[in-house]
Amino acid sequence: MTNNSIFVHRTMSTGSKSIIVPVINDLCTDQRVLRLCAWWHARGYAVTLYGRLLPGSLPMNDLPYRIVRKKHFFNTGMLFYAEYSIRLSIFLLQNKSAWIWSNDLDTLPASALAKRLSPGRKLVYDSHELFTEVPELQHNAFARNVWLFFEQWCIPAVDHAFTVNKSIADIYTKKYGKPFRILRNMPYRLKQKPAATRADLGLPAEKKIILLQGSGINVQRGAEEAVEAMKYLQTDALLLIIGSGDVIPQLKSYVTKNELQDKVWFLPRKPFSELLKYTVNADIGLSLDKDTNLNYRYSLPNKIFDYIQAGIPVLVSDLPELRRIVTEYNVGEVLQEHSSRQLAAQLDTMLASPGRLNEWRTNAESAARILCREEEEKVLESLPL
Image (cartoon, rainbow, N blue to C red; front, side, top):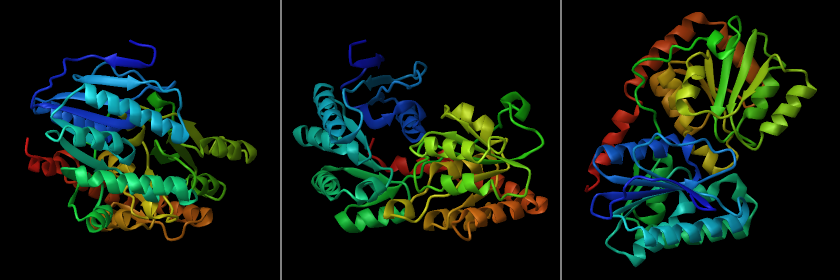
């Protein structure tokens, strides 16, 4: 251990079967990245997962590959991104690997620099979203232009590119003339559901449970309407919000002010294995991103696949990729109008229809055999390992 980093050390190879996987967020809850590392490790590669160590980071001591978690002097703003890029650049230049798997645009400048300075390395870009269209950049022209510049400079250095759905893949392929393959963020097939009961988890047995989970429960992603809808819901139900995000403090204030504490509960983010215990005990799962920017419009949130693996019906925003999943597999409904009253009315109708709920659950069980990591990973077999 040093003053600014923590290593969970495993032997790192510098030969042809080694890969460094940088990510900018907290490693322990990033299931897409953890599943990717497991895939490479299973194929005999020496994997190094590189990311941040935050004050609330959970320990990661049980993984069979090397973990590098860096503390930072800055944790927000451009100074943070600059510090992260410098630290990652130094790390990549000091630690030679055959492959670099860059997750999202904020890890790509350092990764592309390492690739340009060591052309023999293979660089993969895995874009988890339409990064330059995120809401945080829509009113900051300078920052958006900086990221657009990096995107335009970096992508030509990429050997293989992936993203999370067809809509975003089409946009990037058209824009840069480089094929982006689709690697959706799906959990592994759930062979057996957790045995935890509502009583074990401290959840009410008599209420219907409406679940909103995620590590990005932010402004304009539908959580505000979900909480407000509980004022109008006629069904005896609990809205369970599990995760983190910038809107959580505002939601908690609203719940207290409107005396909704018996109808809305908050739990902090949890490791996937723990989160799954709550997911399987829910009656309906929500995914309510709004069409306020291109990034949200073309999003395909991870939670939709977690709900399907858990076998629970869903209610989702009317966004192209979400509508495609719900319509094709008939696992729930698409929200008719993005308002708290409409959300409450639609939830009441769904929860009052046991026959339809059972049909959606059955369909989710069938869809889970297709919408799983085992099937999705087949696209990775095209890589020249």
